Length: 77
Image 1 (cartoon, rainbow, N blue to C red):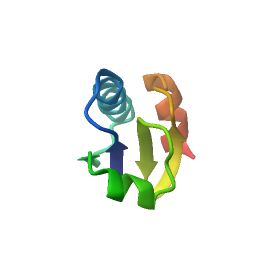
Image 2 (spheres, helix red, strand yellow; image 1 turned 60 degrees about the horizontal axis):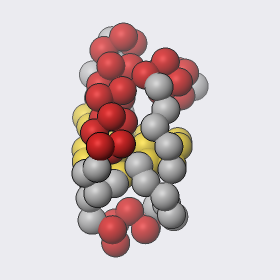
Image 3 (tube, one colour; image 1 turned 90 degrees about the vertical axis):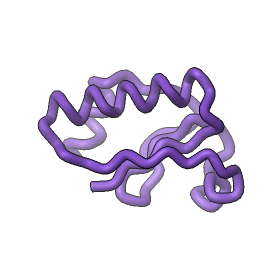
Image 4 (cartoon, rainbow, N blue to C red; image 1 turned 120 degrees about the horizontal axis):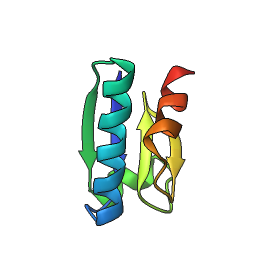
């Protein structure tokens, strides 16, 4: 599983990264987390507002920071 954090590296992007790590730890999932800050790459996902979380090349959420428990639910689907 590959998770991507899309954003410019702002405080919200960092919070999304931390929440994602927490959700993975709670679920016991070993996944790669990649931070993407290049706006051209972010635009390829159709994301207009950051931060965004991409799970296996599908945008799961954008424009807000989901809680760790919300991310857990996304990853269990």
